[in-house]
Amino acid sequence: MTTETLAAAQAQAPATPRTGCDDCVLKVGTLCRRLDHDAREALHRYGRRRTLAKGQTITWQGEPASHVANVLSGVVKLSATTPDGREQILDIVGPGGFLGRIDDRASAFSAIALGPVEICLFPRESFLAAVEDSAEAGAALLERALEDLDRTRRWLLMIARGTAIERVATLLLAFAERDTSPRHAFALTRGQMADLAGLTIETVSRQIGRLKASNIIALPTRDSFEIRDAETLRAIAGEQPGHRPH
Amino acid sequence: MTTETLAAAQAQAPATPRTGCDDCVLKVGTLCRRLDHDAREALHRYGRRRTLAKGQTITWQGEPASHVANVLSGVVKLSATTPDGREQILDIVGPGGFLGRIDDRASAFSAIALGPVEICLFPRESFLAAVEDSAEAGAALLERALEDLDRTRRWLLMIARGTAIERVATLLLAFAERDTSPRHAFALTRGQMADLAGLTIETVSRQIGRLKASNIIALPTRDSFEIRDAETLRAIAGEQPGHRPH
DNA sequence: CGAACGCTTGAGAAGTATCAATACAAGTGG
DNA sequence: CCACTTGTATTGATACTTCTCAAGCGTTCG
Image (cartoon, rainbow over all chains, first blue to last red; front, side, top):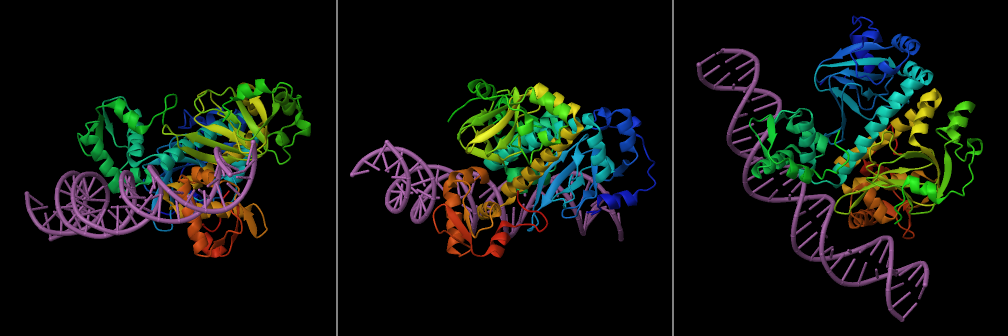
């Protein structure tokens, strides 16, 4: 597993052309889209687009991060590793997501690309300056941060009070939300599901087995599933009416 | 337990004088202190200061919140109640903290005053407008939100991967950080510690008993403790060097 | 004094982790 | 093409942690 820091990533890919925000991939974007032209210019003087391969680490647990980043495309897992070697995924960050710390303390977490990922990388100081100059950018990032906070709190509740089958059912419903076809892909491996749900691989597998045995889901292949009884599945997940996962 | 919403709280205390931000209690404040005069004026046209008694609910789980608030003084617990009646405290919010959702969906959580609390209450729309007008306010709130996010993620890690004694040790260290005298108060009751740590009262009590039996802590009275072996306690808590709890 | 509340302690039950074996799929190299 | 390795998933037996239910204790307060 690569252990590059943001700075290292920047040094490693100096050939990447300086790309302006005007042709930014981030169409649904949080940041660039809501900056006025001047602010965008100022920020884009410092922002660099980088491409990361699957498994590449963007920030490494324990190192002070001099840079922050926005995810342009692809998916990143934000995770921490306990002293005894177990991993906990704290969030899955997709396009528009913010990575890094706003102060200069060491980051407690690692961000690892789950597939090919494009990010926009900023020195922390210039990023902060840009945010303080543009109210729109600040408001957009604030909105995003508060959404992240809300989602993290809901997941904290699930981890703290939910049983194994509740957590797995919630994950399956989240996977199912991503597409409309009846057959859904497991977006994560069993190991990643376990790391996200705070369980072991074996427990995740057993709960999926229980759901299959109860005919609540079916497993046409090993990496896809169909929901046979959505109502029961939602009931197991303890879904509150009025807000949906993710 | 009172179940008032923000709107109800506003209606309930109409006699409170409209207080300007210039004499705001929030000296270390996140918001008001960093607004320029015009923005402060604009916001203060809508902000109302409210005093809440211990146990009073500021927002109620499931209700759409039309207002947001900043905590001026006192401490609030942000918590959720599961369908089966157990409570999970998601965060303890002190002066400078932000309460509420920035969108109009129902709030998933309740905020309950742990003691006498002063808050500054804003209609959500005017609050948002003020943030979009003032880059400084946006930046300050963003900083705060990202801190909250970081702390919540650390606690999620602790809940997901930590054992009962690790969680309790972490809480004790957090209590001990609040004062310098050798004898520390339990800032929360056993029940609140359990709700925060995702445990039961009995388990919390047993872990405290274990720490006492191992001479790692002493219990001079029932609502205070002394740390006898700080190093071991920190080792149990699994404290990473480089960042401290809360 | 009795009631209410918060805390402690005990015994048994339940849920999940751990350890271990096996199965399956996808490469890889002979 | 087939053995072999590697990564991932399933299944079983057992141990351990925490929850649940229950009882008892100490303090405060009416």
